[in-house]
Amino acid sequence: MNLDRKTFLRRLGAGAAGLLAARGLGAMEADGYQSAVTPAWSGDDPEGFWRQVRVQFPMTPERTYFNTGGLGPAPRRVLDMLTVASRQLQERVETGHDFFEQARAIVAGYLGAQPGETCFVRNTTEGTCIVADGLELQAADEVIFETHAHPGGSFPWLNRQRTDGIVVKTFVPDPVNAAANVERIAALITPRTRVIQVSHLTSPTGILLPVPAIAELARRHRLWFHVDGAQSAGMIPVNLPALGCDSFATSGHKWIGGPHETGVLWIRADRIERVTPRHVGAYSSDDRNLNHPGPFLYSPGMKRFEYGTRNAASVLALAEAMRFQTELGRDRIAARGRALAARVRAGFEQIPGVEILTPADPALSGSILTFRSPKLPFGKIFERLLADHRLRCRPVSEVGLDAVRVSTHLFNSPEECDRLVGALGEVLKKA
Ligand SMILES: Cc1ncc(COP(=O)(O)O)c(C=O)c1O
Image 1 (cartoon, protein in one colour):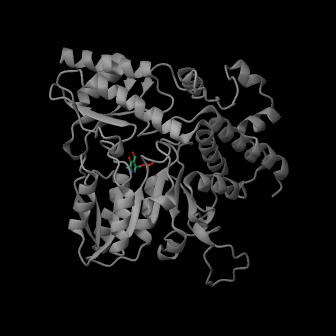
Image 2 (image 1 turned 120 degrees about the horizontal axis):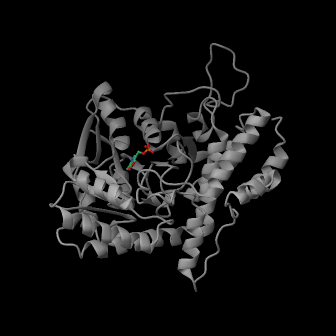
């Protein structure tokens, strides 16, 4: 490409800070921008470390954010990469498609995968659609997923029910007993079952489902096992081969802290050929000497699912988000989110009339806490917390749960959690 590729790559290696340094940081410093340096962990002052992490997120002080499960904020480093890479590519009028491979290597490393097993998608939903639409399924073939599946996980299969006559079967996720989830799925398996799908962590109430045990069940019955990882990657460390599934889709714009409209689909290397690409174009094939009419060969690995002109800046920024988390410590981030959720739980348990729906067992939960109260409908609780206390949670209307969801992530603080507890107490006292 004509872009000064060597220089760009060298700067890319240094992250957004390197890119920005080359353009001059002056304006941003004046704007309150400190630096894109990753805070260093200090066992002596963990809260000081987390305060520095918080500074990396340029979020409005007008409200306190507890909805990473819906949409996560991106740290400065990611926004810098997005902006600078966008501008440089625009200035040179280049797509930057070559950078996909560099970003892919980082993304694959973050997920414990091989680069050829990952492709960039717009969101979890698109990743799941590629699998649901690409598997060879006949009328009356059966697919199993949980009743708590998000529309991004359920609609791709419900659509095939509509168009191809497949049969969807659902199980109610057990929030208390991990093994019971495996048994509930096993009870639905028949000779017509072809696919099992679960959310790694369920969206409405944050139940962490026992994916490796479900993978074992799927393997025994020779079923395709797809995991909707929208709520897990970035919240907890995810190593895809260890999960044992065939495919996994996630969003960059939630727990990972990537730009909006980013995501990753992973398919185990030896399973890729079983998923037929339904949308193809330039880049779906490496063949540069096509003579029409075809045929054409698919690109090796998952690249075949990436067709047409794409936004290289956003995949570079997604990779940057993963580097940021890796440098901070992914176990540390997971433990922090869980500790904050536990703090909110302990506070809510002191408020009369609050029922917590998320499992207390750390083996069955993560950094999401969902609650409800018979004293006030969920919509009203959500509204009062936002309007009177400027606390942004997420109403949960799904499957009649009538609840409110709280997400706690690396930028949240113990003080924010205490404020949320105090605010809920006030809201329910007034009800
Ligand atoms: C479990 C689950 N799957 C899929 C999605 C859809 O995510 P996206 O809109 O990024 O595709 C969500 C969003 O909240 C989710 O929680």
